[in-house]
Amino acid sequence: MGAKKSETRGGKAHAFGGDWTSQKLDILTKYLTAYTTALKDQPFRKAYIDAFAGTGYRTRRDERSSRGPLFPDLAEPDPQSLLDGSARMALQVIPRFDRYIFIDSNADRCAQLETLKNEFPDLGPDISIRTAEANGEIQKLCAMNWKSRRAVLFLDPYGMQVEWQTIADVASTKAIDMWLLFPLGIGVNRLLTKSGEIPDSWRTRLDTLLGTADWYDEFYTVESTPTLFGTDEQRVTKAATETIGRYFNERLKSVFAGVSEKPAVLRNSRNCPLYLLCFAAGNERGAPIAIRIADNLLKGVEAWR
Image: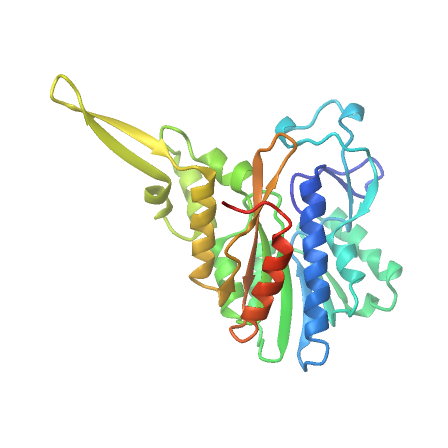
């Protein structure tokens, strides 16, 4: 499911709030339905892969019943209620997928995902729960022979866990469509200091996420202004979030057959941009229709101007 999550007392769900969460899952579910419908008469075996699957449930956080969230700017004043997460929603999609792969690094969450096999007995034999680090597990899946397979991958990380190498491996299969939440406001923008002086550990993290060190020259400009004393005064300007988002979308275009031009901007109640919901199609032949479907779904959410 992704985003900032915390377990409820009953251990059954993750707690977080915001209409943006419902927006992304609504878009995902509609795409999955369109996807399986379009491929229902095709010979490919179809899989749904959820790399940060959580527990299968989600809850909206009630701020009044909490001592306060760790990141108050991400909180939403929604009532506490049990809702389906991405894993359960995917299992309800008709036509169905041939296989479901749910990945999470937390053993307790994976144990709760196992209960989905009982909730959906007809699908149970085709549900695979994997307790693993997402990047390594996805890279293993991508190394398979994809000639007779197709899949939709949902990458909804808890932060900046997704590595560019993973994204590149997904694209190399030429068989996987990917929905990805890019951590725009809660991740990348927070590591980009106003001064441009970035600790080495932060630089490394950004290099791993973006797959290059060239981002620095894209995100910062240095202007020199002559002073009265004949020396130049340098001023560093940090890029706006729109520039960061466009840069990442261009990076996706460098490896995928097709990429939605206008990813959705997901904001919290304070109108702060948190994530970009990006879509990339893996198969060159199927990319045009996949992009049309994704673009139509993304139109309902704010995009870059």
